[in-house]
Amino acid sequence: MALKTIRDFELEGKRVFLRVDFNVPQDKQTGAISDDTRIQAALPTINFALEKKARLILASHLGRPKGKVDPTFTLMPVAERLSELIEKDVIFPDDCVGDGVKKIVREMEPGSVVLLENLRFHPEEEANDPAFSEKLAGLCDIYINDAFGTAHRAHSSTAGIAAYVPDKGVGLLMEKEIEYLGKLLESPERPFVTILGGAKVSDKIGVIQNLIGKVDEILICGAMAYAFLLGRGLAVGTSLVEEDKAKTAAEILSRAESRGVKILLPVDHVVAKAVEPNAETKIVSSEKMPFDLMGLDIGPKTIELYKKEIGKAKTIFWNGPAGVFETPPFDQGTMELAKAVAGSGAMTVIGGGDSVSAVNKAGVADKITHISTGGGASLEFLEGIKLPGIAALES
Image (cartoon, rainbow, N blue to C red):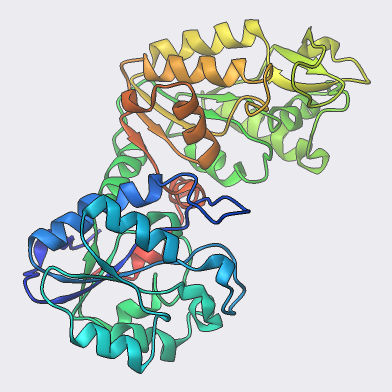
C-alpha cells in the first residue's frame, strides 16, 4: 500500500486534522471515563504533532447519538482527560463544523490543540455526505487518520474527507496496526496459530475462510465452538449456539482438513444451569453434554491441549474469550489462555475488546507484542477486506 505517514509532512504551523478514536467507555450515571486506553493509544501521534508545532485539530465520535445533539455523548469529559494527559489546555468548541469552529481554528497558535465536539451529532457524518466531508476538509491543510477502530466504516471523517485534502496519511497507531496485521497475512513466522472465541461464529466465518491456507492451526473456543460441535453431530445442551451456522461450521472443518490446516475444538467444558457468580458447575466431555446444562467455559483438558499448541507457536493471533470470563468461575479458560499466549515467546497479536480486557485482567498486557485497537476493523482486515479508512489514503 502506498501510504504516507504523519512523519512524511512538514507540520510546523500547519492545521492538521487528526481523526482519532476517542469512543471510550463511560460510567452510565456520572459520564466519567471508565477506561482511557483509546486516549492513551493516540498519544504518540498527538505528541509527535505537537512537538513539530502543528496546529492540531482532533476529531472523534462517541457512542451512538443517532445524528442528533445528545449531551450524554458530549466529548467534554474526553477533552478534560486529554488535557491532563498532555499537560496542555485543550480548546473545546460546541460543534465540529460551522463559523464558530472555523474562527477558533483560524486563530489557533502553533502547538495548540482543539478537540471538536462529537462528529455523530450530525447525521451527515455516518452518511459520508460529500458536503459535510468538504466542511471538515476546509478546517485543515493536512488530514491524518489514526482511528483504526473505525477504519472499516466509510464515514465523512474516516473516508470522505480524504477526497478534499491532497496531503493525507496515517498516524503512528494506524501505521502500527497495518504493520502487525499485515505481517499475519503476508509473512508470519511458523507455526502460525490462531485462537478464535467469543459468542458468534457468524462474526468470524470470513476470517476463518481467509486464514485457512495462511495459518497452521486454529483453536476454537467460546460459545462459537458449539456451532462446530453441532456440525459434528454432537449435542450442546442449552449452550448459546447459532444453530443455523452448524452446516457452515461443518463445511469449514472439511475445507480446513483438505488444506492440511488443523482446527481444534474443545474436548471438555465447564457447564452450569445459568451464568451466575459461583454457580454449581460440572466438567463434562464434548460427547456427554447434559441436555439441561450450558457450556460456559472450556474444561481443564481443553486448556492443557490448547496451551500445548500455543507453546509451539511462533506467531499467534487471538480474538474472542474462551468463556463467560466476566463471571467467575467461568473465567479460568480465558485467563489460562491469556497467560499461555503472553508466555509463548511468539509474536502475539490480540484483537477485539473482550480479548484485550482478558489480557488486562490477567495482568499480561505488557507481554503482548501488539494489542489491536480495532475489534471489527482487525477482523475485516484479516478477512482480506479493503478498509475504506485505509483505501481513502492510498496515493
